[in-house]
Length: 279
Image 1: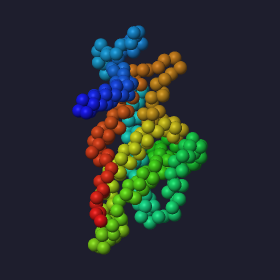
Image 2 (image 1 turned 120 degrees about the horizontal axis):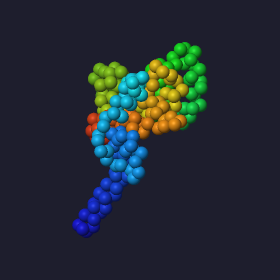
Image 3 (image 1 turned 120 degrees about the vertical axis):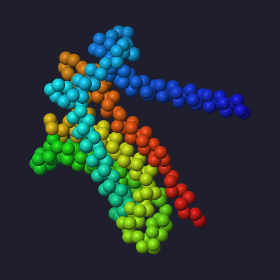
Image 4 (image 1 turned 90 degrees about the horizontal axis):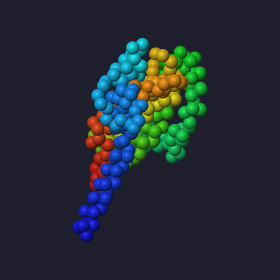
């Protein structure tokens, strides 16, 4: 039995390592390509490790036009839009989710209706949003993308946070109300701290959705605002593809998501309130 356990552990570890290599290979290849010269990434057979780790691709990709491809502008605009979208969506979504969970706002089916709006194809709303933002002169601004991304992130935030509030025992807030807390005070001082793992996980997903968004960034921006998701396709021309610059911007684009996942890893665990109320 002990040998079987060790064998199972070895097989499991081998499968996990194989899966890790399979899924990480494109990322590693992109990272190494960002340091290659033009001769190296067109070489056959393929060059896996570059001869000289040259940062020229990063300089060309990140410098502001006309000296570079505007990667720094894209990084700045993406951070502004993704961060603001996350803050607004989580703030409004948490309040709405708490209302749905505790006060049954709109009835039993209202929360499902909110989730169904997430199934609405964004492309169907692209033209109306474009005409609205054009009329109020918000095209090519950060605010336009923040509003558009918030609209489509809110249903996800509300639905996910409602699940966390549903798992939270209502007796905890009732005790706070008896001790003199207002309903808002019970929400801020009791409910929110206890659903911190859910709040962090929801914020992380919301940030990633806004960070990776492409369609609205393509339709609602011109020159003043350019996210990283818009800059990368612009490096593919009719006569050449700037593989080095694409790899450099792609490498930088995945860093915020990785850093946030590592920094918030200890919060991404559910079940903080299990056993808070004992019978």
